[in-house]
Length: 114
Image (cartoon, rainbow, N blue to C red):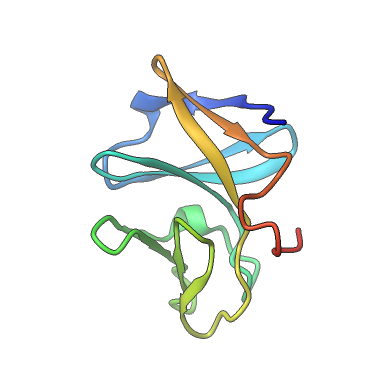
């Protein structure tokens, strides 16, 4: 069962941008593209670096870790560029009114270990 929790205001995340938030002890990067929002665990699986400090590719729907250049698909959490080869947990999120809410209980890519 879904258990969505408030993460931030929609206005806190610029289009093409990313915002680091903590939702009940879980570090999450909220990413906003032109018409979607995504929630991905805020730690690169390669070097434990905050993904929220990286660049967002709205066309490719990816986020890049600034340290070594690993890239992750925001829809699946799967790495799309080395050196990372392990996926990153992604979470269901949606816009409710002017808020972004996230379900941190059950990552959408359930094969991912947290």
